[in-house]
Image (cartoon, rainbow, N blue to C red; front, side):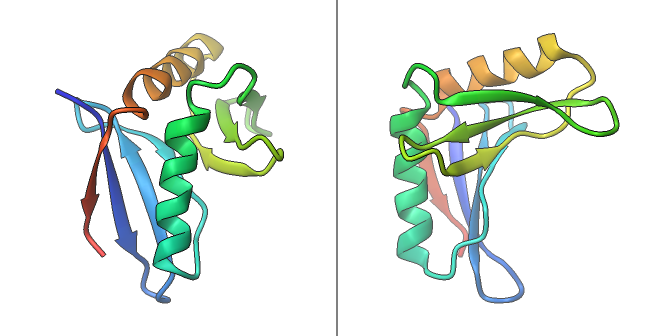
Length: 110
């Protein structure tokens, strides 16, 4: 089963999206966007940058958990992962984004 982007409208009227793996697990979450077109551009940016070398940055949170961010070529963060218990799990999450994002369909729930 292929990955899927879920575009949603937040209670405050802004837009955001999640990238879910084929098993339904959320593997990347976007920032909030004021306009729907901006969120759609963010999805296209994830598709393009997920396969770009050096686009992912692994991080450690203050609580010791691991996560990653996906950055555009200009250095702006376009998505962040959930928290993982181990660096290996976070690395597997990066691999999942790389394999799911480019061909993921869009489910517009906004």
